[in-house]
Length: 122
Image (cartoon, rainbow, N blue to C red; front, side, top):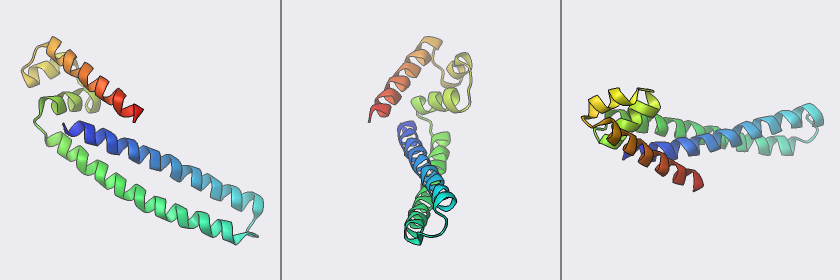
């Protein structure tokens, strides 16, 4: 079930992106209100931003790689996740592609939804 790892990494990427944006706004506030008087704070913030930027780029590459693996996966749960969540296909079309009934696809979507809810609690 590659969709789980994809969702985990996508969530981590999103968290790092929020921290990165907060640090950018902090740097903007330091420059705007303090001027360039206190270069120690600015240097520290710039150093943190550079580290976050590198981490963000690494996570983006990992998420892109995992999405490619997810797209190539033949696991029925991955196919249902991909078609419903990523490609926004209708359940009837998904059922025809995976050779399951609509009811089975709805059950799989419920399982995926429950799994993603537990992932949100982590």
